[in-house]
Amino acid sequence: MTVNRRTVIKGALAAGVATQAFKVPAAVAQAAPLRVGFLTIKTGPLASGGLQMEQGLTVFFKERNNTLAGRPVELHTADTAGNPAQARTKTQELVERLNVAVLIGPLAAFEALAIDDYVRSSRTPILSVAGAEDMTQRKPNPWFVRPSCTSAQPSHPLGEYAAKELKCKRVAVIADDFAFGHENVAGFQRVFEDNGGKVVQKLWTPLNAPDYGTYISQLKGDLDAVYTGHAGSNGFKFIRQLREYGNKVQILGGFTPVDESLLQQMGDDALGAITGNWYSAELDFPINKKFVEAIRRDYKTDPGVYAAETYVCGEVLDHAL
Picture 1 (tube, one colour):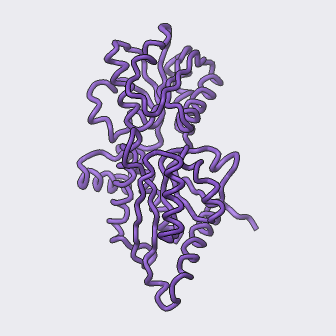
Picture 2 (cartoon, rainbow, N blue to C red):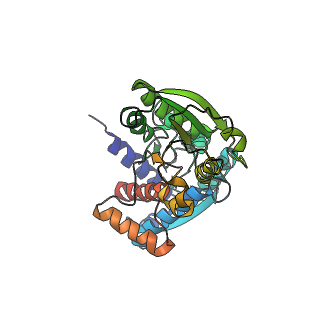
Picture 3 (cartoon, rainbow, N blue to C red):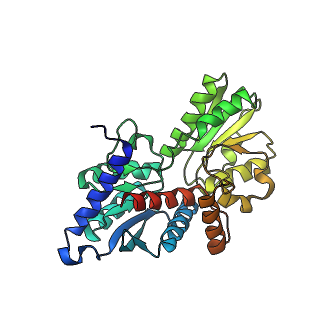
């Protein structure tokens, strides 16, 4: 028998929910709340993405009157603060103390890697936006489902575009010094160099860097472009400071630096920047139009990629149940 990815997803999620159902009397199992754990980030430089995650998931459950598969949903939210150790602690609390049947989140790649072993040993289904490649590639976790992209995937076509269409030959990369930043940059570099370009400089910045001036001053002067692999509000901060320093180099980037949820705050600083992303609020099909309308109505902003992919996490859970 051939077992495809859809079968694995449905099996893992159903197993988790069934395990929870056995904890209550059979007569009330169908009516018992479905406990869902939500790992997000409320503080630190990645909090803007965490806020988007909350918006996307809130809209999803609101559309369904907080009910899935005929059961009321009991959502338990935990703030990981973008800290791997705290992500693991909060995951254990959700599973062991609150008895959640399934997890949604976390946001960051290094958080997903931090909870990998625990998710495996506890056999807890998890739907995540975290792009950590090892979770689905080199060391795939059968309990982990990512219904979006890895850290690197959106950067692959951008690498080809930069080399073939923009005719870039020499590019510097600057990114957050954590798992997502390294994986995101690697995706761009591999395809860019496969198509004749060259990454001539790499600069890695601390996730909580208060200022990028010292790094901007180190950028080489004979560049065709600078690629930014910053996440959360860091991309916005880097681009603004780059322009404030008078550097007019072409900006390239992953799917986070000029996320649509941030564009309204960026003014003219983002003009001309070219980034690779799988999602846009401008995508013209019915379900996206409905989603964008809901986010704009409830939050007075455009949805970004984290809102969209967390909404999709909810859809995958709904279909699996």
